Length: 482
Image (cartoon, rainbow, N blue to C red; front, side):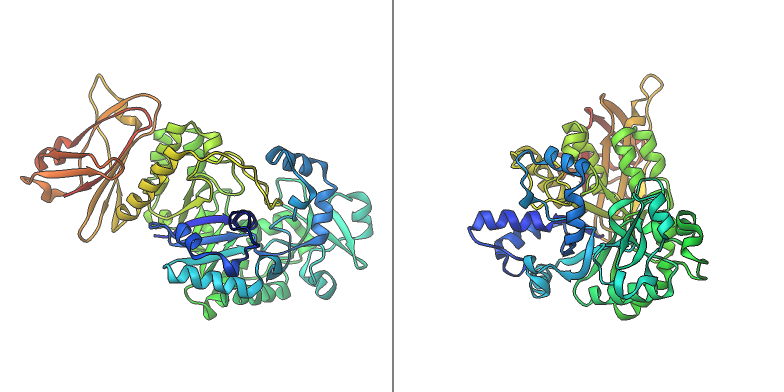
């Protein structure tokens, strides 16, 4: 099971430089720091924002008052030195020299590999910086406009080197002023995308593909129409992924995906796609909604990425009350599929720094939350072994609170685990019939991996009527059966 830990690279190295009293790059991060990152239960590190950022994009950002306001909100003592430009306004897919360059990345990868960890980086398929070499050397790889377009919609087009280009965009939002739109239908662009990803694959173990659904043929055609030209016979991702995997068979493809397109992107070659639907349900809906979501095809679920926050979403500690936060964390940690954790989540950080900034405010560590996550990450690593199964719960005519209980089992070659979460703000009672017939006539000990509390139960009763559960609001059991 893939468990990803996302790190804001600029922020990390800046804080390490202060901690150790010297400039720290990817090539000379102390071993003790890699030991802290490579905690048991995490197998993949995502270093967000390592590529060369764009000076032209930075200049545009510094003129954008709404952006500057968001920077000051996140970092009240903001200085211009704290603004490095967007991590997703990429000028070149070369590790920035200030972060240690390609040699520094190679050392970081070696340090992580020595600790049994994979390394993934960003890939931004939809757009490039306005000073990317392709704008002058390969204009046919981009969406072009006319002088009339620029005059009519200066907020959506820009002129570079005598060419008019469209700004990058998502069809549901205004254009992004600091980036230029690539043409997913261009044969030359597709070849260049393969070459870029093969080169990235020479350096790391996978990529997280930004806004991956924007490159799908039907989405791209609806967004850009005749400007893009006729759609190719092959969709973008099947074309690209197959050719990259011919060179790097085990390369991990993770898609940032929305609009319920996860299943389609899985079929187009992605190992995992963001499960934004589960994120929304856990934040805003109830146990029944989540249970319905978890009834989806298991193959599909194995290809999802479960998360409570990342660099695009608000911090979980800022959006969820602490008890609900913990219940949601137990849920995402123990489901099939990949799990994504965000650096700072375990410590209860509440400020999400914009991806333009190299510094974040100091915040106190929530020691109780950190201890909870330490226990949870280790427990989830033990639990997620073998076959997963969503379980039913039952109640009584005068007590239907079992509807607030989420329950599932994991059956490994030599292990059995049971997860039960009261995903509600009131106590819940119910019975959970267990799925292992050979429990009959055998006493069982259930050990809660979150609390180390043990419960001795009769095997026959665990099968019918089932394990009796009485959980306070937002509490959970993560149980090992022996």
